[in-house]
Amino acid sequence: MLLKIILYSSITLILFTKVCWSEETTKIECPCLNNGTCLQESNSSIHCKCSIGFFGSMCEFEICDDKNNKQCQNGTCLKDTRTNKQFCKCKPTHEGALCENEICSKYCYNNGSCSNGFTESTLFENYLSINYTMNFTCKCQSDRFSGDKCEFDLCADKVSSCPVQVYSNSKCECIVGNECDKEHCNSKGNCTRENGKVACK
Image (cartoon, rainbow, N blue to C red; front, top):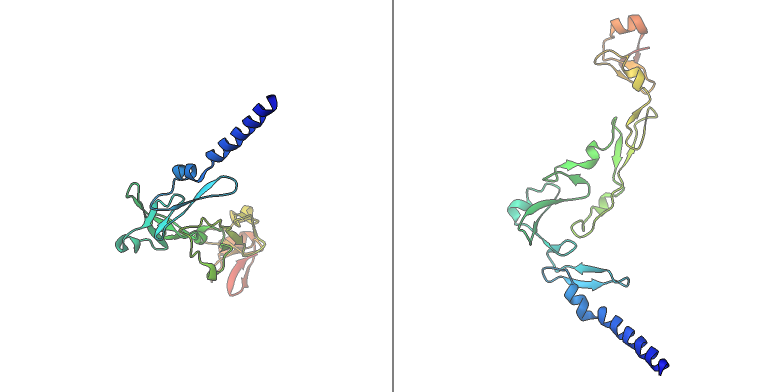
């Protein structure tokens, strides 16, 4: 009798488990909107497959009308179907209310060259459906600069000793325009030309 009870309990547990993860139960808990299809992964997590024209983790967004959509300079205008609020969904390379700012343009310091890790042939055609992980990197213009964003200047201490409107070259030498800053050079160095410009050495 004890053996029968144990077997019966095991069967009950198995049946109960199947009911908990049945297709019907999953459908009830499905969060997808706008006729999105709910898909269950092997690890029991759920995600939405959106109908054409809808986007978002719950298929909650649709594309705005043409008037507003044209204002999103480097992105697409989306409307939240739950609240009717509209916003610009930017391409991963841009940011701003109207996607007007290119992230790379101000990412690197000291005139470093920015790269986003993608080629022009993969310009995020599916950026409305896929959250791209961007990898912005900087290539510094010379060994004078370092850091992930070329933010560190080897000549930082010496730059402050240069007079106004004078900059330093890669060797931490003060460079002026076409005319020598005589006051600076007379007291701290000699005028010399370098690549058509005057340097105080």
